[in-house]
Length: 454
Image (cartoon, rainbow, N blue to C red):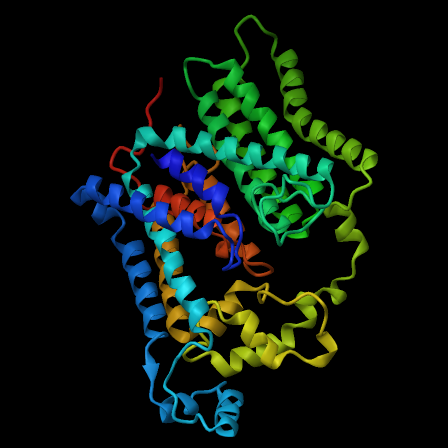
């Protein structure tokens, strides 16, 4: 059931817009899955997830509070409501009771979207140590399938039926997502998952050569695909994840397969080891160079070199976003309200045919839409996360043991958080579930989380 849930979430939850037609199906299915997980959870499972569950409940409660109608005098006195108050006065509707949210419909949508997060948390709580490899392999397969779908989208050209969403980066490799940045961030994270599984395979006594070769191929393939997607944030993320992947796989190889045999001269062993150490990065660099040379597409490298950062809408809109933070930092403008509220503050110089759908800095947008309560909940979650990671220690962090999630998952969560400074990956249901799953596996492991040798 966890794998089925993951597959359906990635098939139906790859967009952040509120009008994605698959969202009602996904949310209905999430309710069913959550009910199934509730019937299966044991007291120990509830204790493991009590902190993230409490944070999700408090967040849901704050969304509900933003929908409670307020007296006109109270509502008009709130910061950021002056423009609406003037319109009310002109229309003779100054006595209307309104909720805290400036866009109640969007806040209702965000509230209903919490069903997916709760289902993800409950399903993650049901996972035992034996379920970890199966779920991780499913994530790698989803990443490879998404990359292959991206190739079909490019081959089909603009308007290809391979695109799953009506509003998307048409002509780009978006895979199972509607946004190429989210696709690139996901693939960079999947690279680390594949490396983690490859390390575990290298540490097994019973060798499975086909699986090792498949995982190594997946790492190289996903890294090249991320470069081709054309996401600058994805390029930075994939450099980080590939370096960490190389480090953990290398240490596992040296520990289990990198020692000289008795009959092998040491100088020959050292020469062979240097070759093995250098081969993967060289092969990857050559592969990327060949692909970039043969491709006339806009890639992450060409965008990084050819586009001026100063012309990026994220930079141009930042003064306006700062103004919005100053207006709404206390109670927020309402979950999901950013694109509509931004139009009130949008300067004429930045008007363009396409609309600015998010702040492209989720840390800033959470303050704008959720206010101080949402910011405090986020800080509490980050404090708990850091404490749980530090409690696990850093001994043999890179080398690890079979089934060790500490370094790879911490890097994955760090990549998602860093990407949130320039984009909004954690507003996509599939990436939300992915992040919850990684968090629970790292911070709320089952009692027998260490896998012994085979």
